[in-house]
Length: 161
Image (cartoon, helix red, strand yellow):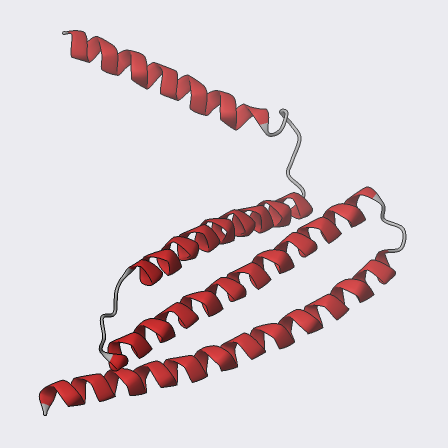
């Protein structure tokens, strides 16, 4: 009987909390603007990238803590794995910074609609640099993956001989 009462109490508190949170965003009759939806998506992406960046840092630490022993092929694979995680982290940091700049730019324009064309030109210039940087990271990733596949093949072939 105590369990049922506790479940009801927890369920009630949870329902009230959810209802309270749902009502804190906007008052009745107030509709979300398209800009708010875009900002919400940008914030969600920034948060997810922050989580990814922290997670990849932990994975890089795990790779560094794992001993590859004295086998040069395993050492090479471990170094390539670490390089891959570092490259992934660079990509996520670049993406996060791009989203932060985009979000901040949209907020700036929301607060002051004057000078919109100048802000747009600056953002387009940033976007162009961002696309080039992402392409560069993709090329580096492709080269690294090719090296990793070749090192794996050498290791497996050596073990099978």
